[in-house]
Amino acid sequence: MEIFEYVAVLTSIIIGLGMAQLLMGVTRLIQHPEQAKANLIHLCWVFYMFLFSIFWWWWEFRLDAIEVWTFGIYLFVILYAFLVFLLCALLFPSDFSGYDGFKDYFYAKRAWFFSVFILSQLADIADSMIKGMDYSYSLGFHYTATQLAIVAFSVTAIFTKNDRFHATFVLALSAYMVFSGFTLYDTVS
Image 1 (cartoon, rainbow, N blue to C red):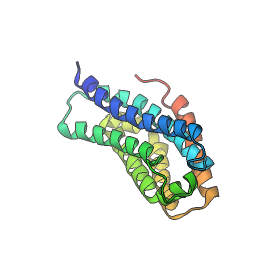
Image 2: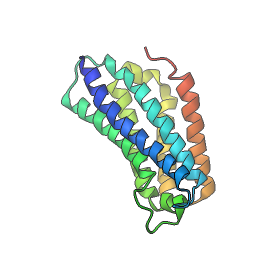
Image 3: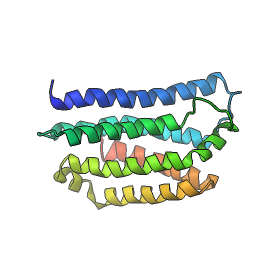
């Protein structure tokens, strides 16, 4: 087993656990809608994180180009996967005591969610650099600019409960994820 395959097994488990959190959360929502009122913005974030998890795993195939693995790189990739898991887990509480549905829960936990989301965007930039400067440069200036814009909007999301802002943000991110996923990252080579 190559070192990349060894790392991929562990990160796949972590990402899989995050996706399981999302799938179980949606399943509980369908099975027991009386436990908590659904919210469209929250469900859009669930959809986005499902896409993000799928694409994350796809993007990480480029790590196979790393010839010399260090413990630091290994630890970084594991922590990056953990951030994705944490984002998925934060979308569904184990207990709704004290919350009036998913909207109330999401806004109550938005500082945690968007703080971790910011870390994941910064980790994505570092991850691109770890894959090699040629790869990082191939993404172009728009990649870094987009990541920094996402960070800026995430900082705003920490401080606002404006439904229109949050809906626009998650819908724009989802559209960008689908567009970039199928155009910029369609092939791994």
